[in-house]
Image (cartoon, rainbow, N blue to C red; front, side, top):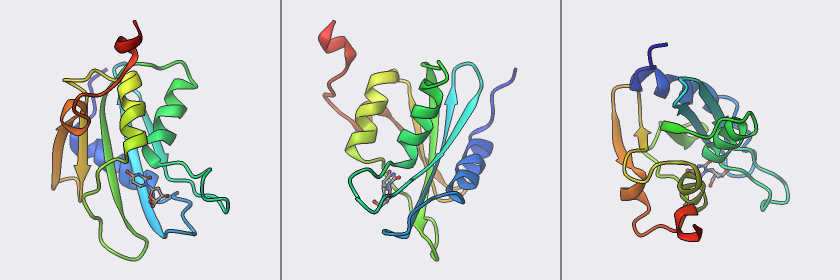
Length: 139
Ligand code: THU
């Protein structure tokens, strides 16, 4: 199976963002996570009246994949912005970076921060989370 292009992965993140449940922040986020097996897991942010139980788009995508037994990942595309505004290049929160640290290769996992399929920055987990703590530290 040929792997999806960065542009198409960003389009899937944009599609996921349409499902954002964000009645409190009105900030809509979508993610599309490409697993090494070629499958893509989409996620959106899901807020809660209790605020603390809210979940970011990135973690929704990771937890969907992990709950289906998929544990190896290549790339995540992230798109975000206010409900009635334009997309803003948005970096993942610290908690989501730590979840990436659990499942992704430090130097090679790619994080695409996109405003559109044509306009995006590519980061690695290592650049986003320098001197991170992960499973290897407990080995
Ligand atoms: N949010 C994400 O889903 N991902 C990010 O990378 C940053 C923030 C969500 C959490 C909350 O629902 C809203 O955006 C405002 O913080």
